[in-house]
Length: 265
Image (cartoon, rainbow, N blue to C red):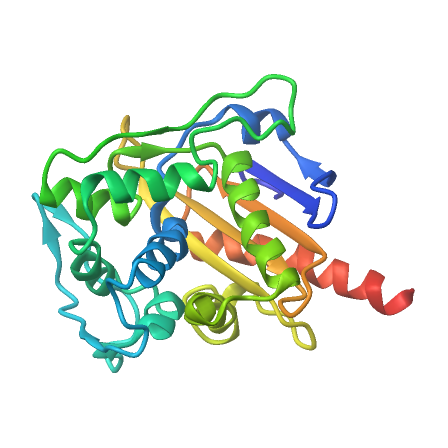
């Protein structure tokens, strides 16, 4: 984190206790749009409600404007049609903008509330509380599903949400949600979160990039857990300036150190 303003928090998956942190106060108090880190929860809601088939491929239109907001896809142009697993791995905005329209406004809001994105994490003495708006139209629903409007969370709230995913993985992923977890692994292995990749350890994670309400300057998130097959740690990285890929690069150093410690035991 040298020369970068932000926060890193690492927690034990089993106990939920923080085991390492940098700038915990910022992680507890900063509200920010989460960007694409919301996509796994949106996808799980679609799959579990039967409103989306994980194997159905949707066309990526790449150029995407929603209510005047530019949300173009940045994954490789060769990725033109994606199923659910690929949509997570490549963080395809076009895919999620199309799929999200199958949800009602209340379903989207409830899906994000269900994982604690507007509830204090309990990991710090003084915390801000995220807020999730009820979308008031189709375009706002799409933007909220993409984490770009209508929702702000703290890094600690994101950490708790992804710990929930890690606990599901430890207990056994329901078949219907398999694409979500496979996509998170692929995201780090070769997708948009590849900057977090560490040779010899399976990592699951997701990046997010968004602009704040106050400025067009972008901030970046990475949230993930490892080892992906039986998660022991979960972490969040928040960079006040930068992109999700920059946050993933910070996470890479943490995962690499964790792998060294595990190998030494």
